[in-house]
Length: 360
Ligand code: SF4
Image (cartoon, rainbow, N blue to C red):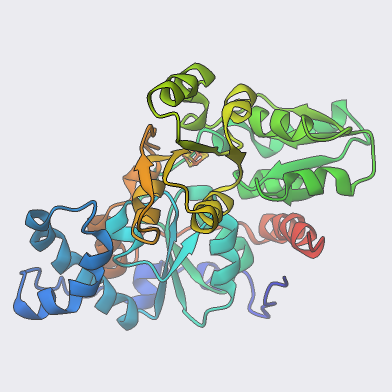
């Protein structure tokens, strides 16, 4: 997999001192009534979400979905939605869905001038790093992440100083500042292969202590950890999973590797969000429990008829800051723009590209 290279100078419009609103201009707020035209245009979308959104609620959502879909064409914008977005966003307005890295890589392949990142801030930064010529907007700048916030670039520099010669691998859930200080990036899909790619006895895998421990359990390489965790996945417990199995003995349990190792040990399968979705689509279990953020099961359910989802899920409060109304405002007012210092972006991109170029 290769990333489209760009010749455009990183952050050029920012250097010109103009905000995204000044560069693109404001658009008039559209009519948000539920008209027959809106009902007809959004009927195919409702088919995909009717298992989760009651018919009585659709007239309140459909006009905003319809307006966003018209506005994004007007703005030459593409909407990237993480697997944890709510179904109205995931099925209603997204052009590209997936995990954070899939989204950022796919965004480099579009001709769209504007990216609206429906996810959290580090994801928007990753999109900006890989598509520096594009304007990247996030509907709520406060959408953070407990993992990304557990470590700074200065922390990584100090870690390197204290541990000279030990490679530092960063999970993709980190800020651009952190990526810029690390040797290579990884995702939950390829973390094991990245760890083993160095051919050394010892590596740091930061910042998720659970992902690092889960990878460490599968390799002879000593995987050193940072004390970060995902506040959503660390809440699941092995005891809770055992209790569910007593109630539902036929259920297949699949877990994200950001869960504690004892939770992963209780699961039938562990993998990234993309791998979890593939697993359900391929295996088609009668009953499945996705040990991850709530919205994922809601989003996949319409694509896997016949699979019964049991939902012992936890909500990510950061992901849930992104709503249809905020996406609409983003497209109308061109806010809020995600900016990465060009020098930091260059170094962070190197870490991401090293991972991509491993071809694993
Ligand atoms: S689910 Fe966890 S890792 Fe993902 S954004 Fe929320 S806090 Fe961060």
